[in-house]
Image (cartoon, rainbow, N blue to C red; front, side, top):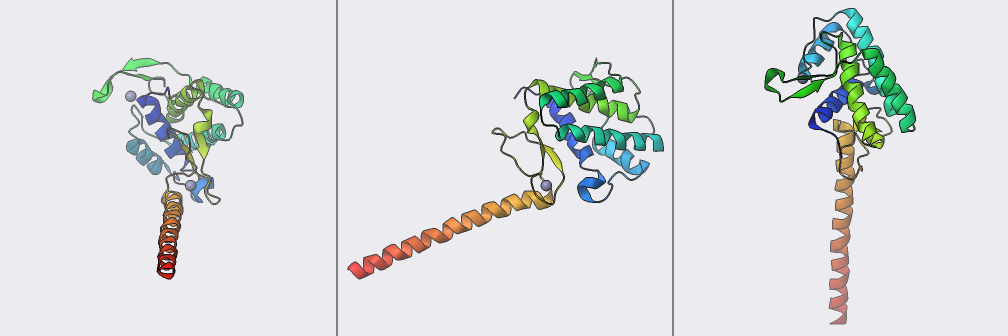
Length: 201
Ligand SMILES: [Zn+2]
Ligand SMILES: [Zn+2]
Protein backbone atom coordinates (compact mmCIF):
# COMPACT_ATOMS: atom_id res chain seq x y z
CA UNK A 1 0.00 0.00 0.00
CA UNK A 2 1.34 3.41 -0.95
CA UNK A 3 1.13 5.21 2.35
CA UNK A 4 4.07 6.55 4.33
CA UNK A 5 4.95 6.18 7.98
CA UNK A 6 3.95 9.84 8.54
CA UNK A 7 0.52 9.15 7.09
CA UNK A 8 0.18 6.10 9.28
CA UNK A 9 0.97 8.20 12.37
CA UNK A 10 -1.61 10.82 11.35
CA UNK A 11 -4.20 8.10 10.74
CA UNK A 12 -3.55 6.73 14.20
CA UNK A 13 -4.21 10.17 15.73
CA UNK A 14 -7.33 10.43 13.57
CA UNK A 15 -8.70 7.14 14.87
CA UNK A 16 -7.88 8.05 18.48
CA UNK A 17 -9.64 11.39 18.04
CA UNK A 18 -12.76 9.92 16.44
CA UNK A 19 -13.05 7.30 19.15
CA UNK A 20 -13.24 9.94 21.89
CA UNK A 21 -16.76 10.96 20.75
CA UNK A 22 -19.78 10.38 23.02
CA UNK A 23 -21.65 8.51 20.27
CA UNK A 24 -18.81 5.97 20.33
CA UNK A 25 -18.42 5.17 23.98
CA UNK A 26 -21.42 6.72 25.68
CA UNK A 27 -19.28 9.39 27.33
CA UNK A 28 -17.40 12.34 25.95
CA UNK A 29 -13.71 11.50 26.40
CA UNK A 30 -12.71 15.10 25.62
CA UNK A 31 -15.08 16.86 28.01
CA UNK A 32 -12.88 19.85 28.85
CA UNK A 33 -9.74 21.76 27.91
CA UNK A 34 -7.63 19.69 30.31
CA UNK A 35 -8.67 16.47 28.55
CA UNK A 36 -7.93 18.05 25.18
CA UNK A 37 -4.53 19.17 26.47
CA UNK A 38 -3.79 15.62 27.65
CA UNK A 39 -4.82 14.29 24.22
CA UNK A 40 -2.39 16.69 22.50
CA UNK A 41 0.45 15.56 24.80
CA UNK A 42 -0.40 11.86 24.45
CA UNK A 43 -0.52 12.08 20.66
CA UNK A 44 2.66 14.20 20.56
CA UNK A 45 1.02 16.92 18.47
CA UNK A 46 3.64 19.66 17.99
CA UNK A 47 3.40 23.47 17.91
CA UNK A 48 0.15 23.75 19.85
CA UNK A 49 -0.41 27.03 21.72
CA UNK A 50 -2.40 27.11 24.95
CA UNK A 51 -5.94 25.84 24.49
CA UNK A 52 -9.29 27.48 25.22
CA UNK A 53 -12.96 26.51 25.32
CA UNK A 54 -13.22 27.67 21.68
CA UNK A 55 -10.57 25.11 20.72
CA UNK A 56 -12.52 22.41 22.50
CA UNK A 57 -15.76 23.30 20.70
CA UNK A 58 -14.00 23.51 17.33
CA UNK A 59 -12.25 20.17 17.81
CA UNK A 60 -15.59 18.54 18.68
CA UNK A 61 -17.04 19.94 15.43
CA UNK A 62 -14.05 18.82 13.42
CA UNK A 63 -14.33 15.34 14.92
CA UNK A 64 -17.88 14.99 13.57
CA UNK A 65 -16.79 16.15 10.10
CA UNK A 66 -13.88 13.70 10.06
CA UNK A 67 -16.16 10.89 11.15
CA UNK A 68 -18.42 11.50 8.15
CA UNK A 69 -15.56 10.44 5.87
CA UNK A 70 -15.72 6.94 7.43
CA UNK A 71 -19.41 6.71 6.55
CA UNK A 72 -19.09 7.59 2.88
CA UNK A 73 -20.24 5.21 0.17
CA UNK A 74 -17.65 6.12 -2.42
CA UNK A 75 -14.44 7.99 -3.07
CA UNK A 76 -16.19 10.92 -4.79
CA UNK A 77 -18.17 11.70 -1.64
CA UNK A 78 -15.14 11.16 0.59
CA UNK A 79 -12.97 13.39 -1.61
CA UNK A 80 -15.50 16.23 -1.39
CA UNK A 81 -15.50 16.05 2.39
CA UNK A 82 -11.71 15.91 2.57
CA UNK A 83 -11.31 18.79 0.11
CA UNK A 84 -13.63 20.95 2.18
CA UNK A 85 -11.82 20.06 5.43
CA UNK A 86 -8.38 20.78 4.05
CA UNK A 87 -9.48 23.99 2.32
CA UNK A 88 -11.01 25.34 5.55
CA UNK A 89 -7.82 24.56 7.43
CA UNK A 90 -5.68 26.81 5.24
CA UNK A 91 -2.84 24.34 4.69
CA UNK A 92 0.70 25.55 4.01
CA UNK A 93 2.94 22.52 3.37
CA UNK A 94 6.52 23.03 4.61
CA UNK A 95 9.47 20.80 5.35
CA UNK A 96 10.69 20.46 8.91
CA UNK A 97 12.96 18.17 10.95
CA UNK A 98 12.01 19.34 14.44
CA UNK A 99 12.74 17.34 17.60
CA UNK A 100 15.11 14.87 15.94
CA UNK A 101 12.36 13.60 13.66
CA UNK A 102 13.54 13.04 10.11
CA UNK A 103 12.50 15.49 7.42
CA UNK A 104 8.76 15.48 7.04
CA UNK A 105 6.01 17.81 5.87
CA UNK A 106 3.79 19.86 8.14
CA UNK A 107 0.61 20.73 6.32
CA UNK A 108 -0.81 22.98 9.04
CA UNK A 109 -0.05 26.72 8.96
CA UNK A 110 2.42 27.90 11.64
CA UNK A 111 0.56 28.55 14.91
CA UNK A 112 -2.71 27.38 13.42
CA UNK A 113 -5.52 26.84 15.92
CA UNK A 114 -5.67 23.18 17.01
CA UNK A 115 -8.74 22.32 14.92
CA UNK A 116 -7.10 23.80 11.79
CA UNK A 117 -3.86 22.00 12.61
CA UNK A 118 -5.71 18.69 12.95
CA UNK A 119 -7.92 19.30 9.92
CA UNK A 120 -4.83 19.93 7.79
CA UNK A 121 -2.81 16.95 9.03
CA UNK A 122 -5.62 14.43 9.42
CA UNK A 123 -7.36 15.65 6.27
CA UNK A 124 -4.17 15.12 4.28
CA UNK A 125 -3.72 11.63 5.73
CA UNK A 126 -7.22 10.84 4.46
CA UNK A 127 -6.31 12.39 1.11
CA UNK A 128 -3.35 10.00 0.84
CA UNK A 129 -5.57 7.00 1.62
CA UNK A 130 -7.99 8.12 -1.09
CA UNK A 131 -5.28 8.73 -3.70
CA UNK A 132 -3.87 5.27 -2.93
CA UNK A 133 -7.34 3.89 -3.81
CA UNK A 134 -7.76 2.58 -0.26
CA UNK A 135 -10.96 4.23 0.98
CA UNK A 136 -12.27 0.79 1.92
CA UNK A 137 -9.68 0.63 4.67
CA UNK A 138 -11.55 3.33 6.59
CA UNK A 139 -13.79 1.08 8.63
CA UNK A 140 -16.37 1.08 11.34
CA UNK A 141 -16.20 -1.77 13.83
CA UNK A 142 -18.70 -4.49 12.92
CA UNK A 143 -19.45 -5.48 16.49
CA UNK A 144 -23.16 -4.70 16.97
CA UNK A 145 -22.65 -2.68 20.15
CA UNK A 146 -19.55 -0.78 19.03
CA UNK A 147 -19.32 2.49 17.12
CA UNK A 148 -15.54 2.80 17.04
CA UNK A 149 -13.71 3.41 13.78
CA UNK A 150 -10.36 2.04 12.69
CA UNK A 151 -8.09 2.03 9.65
CA UNK A 152 -7.56 -1.50 8.44
CA UNK A 153 -3.86 -1.69 7.62
CA UNK A 154 -3.87 -5.48 7.36
CA UNK A 155 -2.38 -6.93 4.19
CA UNK A 156 -5.59 -8.54 2.97
CA UNK A 157 -8.01 -5.85 4.29
CA UNK A 158 -9.72 -8.49 6.41
CA UNK A 159 -10.08 -6.67 9.72
CA UNK A 160 -13.67 -6.39 10.91
CA UNK A 161 -13.38 -5.30 14.53
CA UNK A 162 -11.64 -2.45 16.33
CA UNK A 163 -8.87 -3.28 18.78
CA UNK A 164 -10.76 -2.21 21.89
CA UNK A 165 -10.62 -4.72 24.74
CA UNK A 166 -14.15 -5.97 24.12
CA UNK A 167 -14.04 -6.24 20.34
CA UNK A 168 -10.45 -7.48 20.13
CA UNK A 169 -11.43 -10.13 22.69
CA UNK A 170 -14.55 -10.99 20.76
CA UNK A 171 -12.32 -11.99 17.87
CA UNK A 172 -10.01 -13.97 20.12
CA UNK A 173 -12.93 -15.72 21.79
CA UNK A 174 -14.42 -16.67 18.42
CA UNK A 175 -11.06 -18.03 17.27
CA UNK A 176 -10.60 -19.88 20.57
CA UNK A 177 -14.06 -21.49 20.33
CA UNK A 178 -13.38 -22.53 16.75
CA UNK A 179 -10.08 -24.11 17.82
CA UNK A 180 -11.83 -25.85 20.72
CA UNK A 181 -14.51 -27.24 18.45
CA UNK A 182 -11.96 -28.69 16.06
CA UNK A 183 -9.87 -29.97 18.99
CA UNK A 184 -12.97 -31.72 20.39
CA UNK A 185 -13.85 -33.13 17.00
CA UNK A 186 -10.45 -34.76 16.56
CA UNK A 187 -10.38 -36.91 19.75
CA UNK A 188 -13.97 -37.99 19.04
CA UNK A 189 -12.97 -39.15 15.57
CA UNK A 190 -9.98 -40.93 17.10
CA UNK A 191 -12.20 -42.61 19.72
CA UNK A 192 -14.56 -43.82 17.00
CA UNK A 193 -11.64 -45.15 14.99
CA UNK A 194 -10.26 -46.89 18.10
CA UNK A 195 -13.67 -48.40 18.95
CA UNK A 196 -13.98 -49.64 15.40
CA UNK A 197 -10.48 -51.10 15.61
CA UNK A 198 -11.43 -52.91 18.84
CA UNK A 199 -14.70 -54.35 17.45
CA UNK A 200 -13.07 -55.51 14.24
CA UNK A 201 -10.23 -57.19 16.15
ZN1 LIG B 1 6.28 17.25 12.86
ZN1 LIG C 1 -15.32 -2.42 18.31
